[in-house]
Length: 61
Ligand code: FES
Image 1 (cartoon, rainbow, N blue to C red):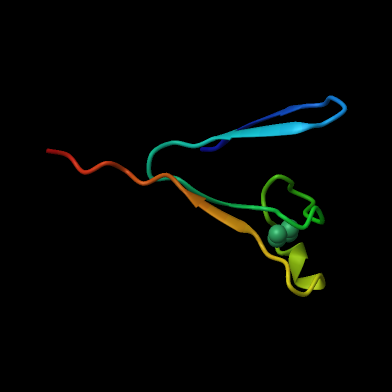
Image 2: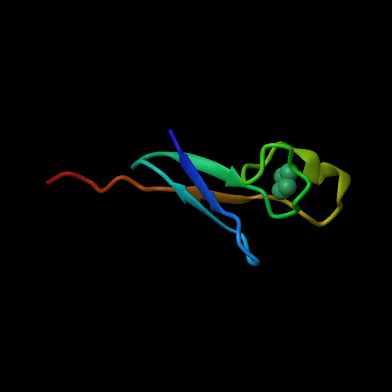
């Protein structure tokens, strides 16, 4: 499961750590109640949508 850590400074920065094979939708509209994750609120803002981030597992062998 994604691990989220936010540093509240003058320029807040959020770090999201993912496990191999994990996939998340990150909010780019700043309207999500689950920020930094997308909750669908962007549908109220035409032309905006999430960034889909996926950690691809390396093939074995
Ligand atoms: S809620 Fe912000 S991109 Fe989906």
